[in-house]
Image 1 (cartoon, each protein chain N blue to C red):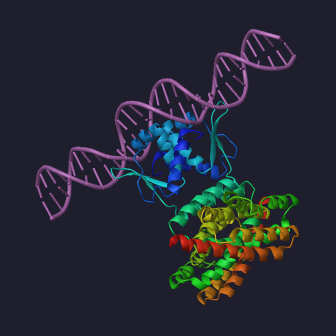
Image 2: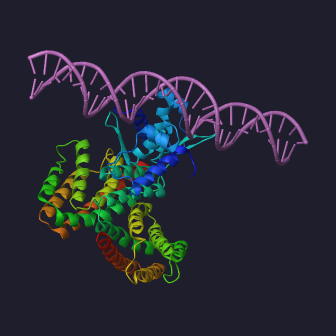
Image 3: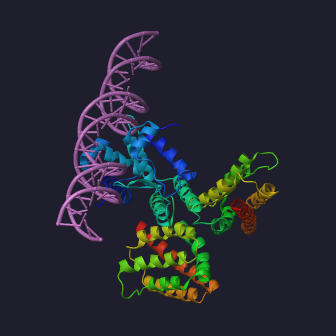
Length: 233
Length: 233
DNA sequence: CGGCGGCAATCGTCTGACACTTGGATGGAG
DNA sequence: CTCCATCCAAGTGTCAGACGATTGCCGCCG
């Protein structure tokens, strides 16, 4: 094993978690024991634990019943990590707006069909709540509701990975363009598209939802590309 | 600000990186300065830095020219994080083999078409190198080459996000089923599919590549599902 | 029986010290 | 003048010890 002791230790524990030797929910030895077991100082142990914690592999609590517990990363955790990574890659111009939207097409168009087929009544209700009236709400609320609509639709497919992967993509786009001045009629067009999608999902019309989503994403792509050109001069 | 000091500090620095205030490549103050600036001990600073480092937001080196430098996460970093997350979600049975393969379909089938359109001669050569002869190589080598073939194909699309997202999916499947006993003729079928895909990409036949990839993934799905049923009894 | 205070376990934080790594500066040999 | 070995300075890496903060439990007292 090479590298600093904290990295070696983190790698060792990490491997034990990944291999299932340390089951989710189980408790790691306390910091003094780890320190003694591996023959390193407690600071070194703590640095290794911080490393694991920031990857959501463990969770640490204080108090008499405290300690470090193996935790299963949630959809939200994974999604958040992916979002920061994609944000930075986009900022470094290694990823373009067109590439982001192209991936959304690949994922969200079939997802709309799946959602139309598998949605529950409760999910349909969630979808309705995520609609908005562009004439009444402020920019902040519309921009948040816009994300929610797509999020709920992804969730209704029943495949959690779809949400993990796709949510970061549109969150990156939304935080980048949410504040900019959108073209005239953009938000009302979005609201119309969402309403249409809602109705098609309600009717379980998978083919219709697929077509509508494709058109909706085409609208978004056009608007985003236009805003992107403007912001770059 | 709530929570432990190391978390607050990590969040503060993290926000400065995400906002662009700390540019990629720039150097953070050394640990003593950070300690003084934020009024915390050096151990606390170090725990915050380990946290950021394990998210690939900074990179720390030793020596006189050492320190912590803001770093842009690479495709490999992101991909690796996603892989561990998906591995754990799959282990916790929150994600099924079918769902993993369904996502591969969504992403890799169109990717094959894109690769056929945009591939360079060099990438075609990489693709050829990633083929294998099931009669000659051992299980270990075939299993690694199988991954490489799909990886190279994704890379040839020119969209780095496609690789980031898709590579973890098939790596998870490969590490899970790579050691198991595959059905008779599985590997030679895979080799034939790869050879066919290579030829279609060479001929820049996008539609053909799409069809071939769809069939190839159908083969894989069948084999994986069968192995999955066996391993569960 | 219920509230309340102490108690123990554990993490959180600070201080100070020293070892290790690295790259440049220095100085002598050829 | 060039080249190589050596020393030095700036950082991170690691350890030991101490004390504070938090939390849940247990026993005491009303």
